[in-house]
Length: 42
Image (cartoon, rainbow, N blue to C red; front, side, top):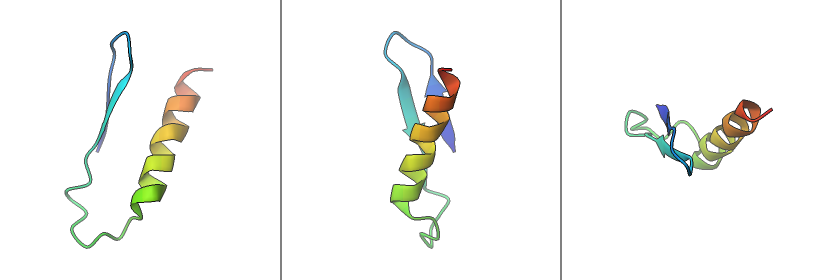
């Protein structure tokens, strides 16, 4: 789950607790979050 809070400074929460088997590389999840943020600021 990826949540973005709208404040003066953007704040993100990346919840990976459902991925118990760690099937998703944490670096990839972080990169996807950065990509989502970049796409929002066109």
